[in-house]
Image (cartoon, rainbow, N blue to C red):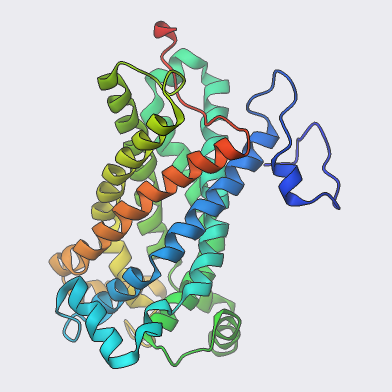
Length: 330
């Protein structure tokens, strides 16, 4: 998102000074805005996913071995700590932080870019009428790009969670998968990642954007008319609602993703053949429900945190987040 910046950035310039640089006069949504949006997205996703690594470890264990881990979220925590120690709950932390910084960079930066490009192409009035399809399309496009970068790191993370003895860290995990399975081993879960992340992100941004509008309308206000603390509160509340909706919609694919990255899962053959076997063995109801409660807790909290941190970081960088506006209410 920086290729068309009107002010070429020196390679020696510190990243902080670059991000704090103002946009040219009269240009609110230029390439500098997209750079700030991408950076804020990377920061919010790495912080939230990293902080919730223990919850994700429990969720993944429940999905991979529901017979053994059958005591719920709190029971799962106690079981893992009792058997493996507290540090087992940090398994995959490195891959999570790095992977989701990269994913957040392209996801949030991409959504901002595609939204604003749609408004420029359609005009403000038409864009307001089509804001939900724009949210959905922007989120789908941005997430597809982001997942190309996330998939290898997610493969390392899940392999480490399913088998704590697999590697000694992110670099070691990468090396072992590359040596044992080749480059395609990193993309064994690409199908389920796309099936999980694309609907999840489409729901997340569309629900959050529309719920934020509902909340502002109920208050008789708008983002521009509200204080920064009010806007943060709206982002958090709408984020929780969006997170729970997103978790429910994407949960079956999330379960498949956890299972397909477990060594030997689904037997031999092409990825979709393996996925078909896993789905058949697991059953539709279990795909939809096993591990759903901890995932709703995790994703609801995570999504609220992401939107709250994103808005806060954007404000700290001197950027005002883009919002669809009704031209008839100006």
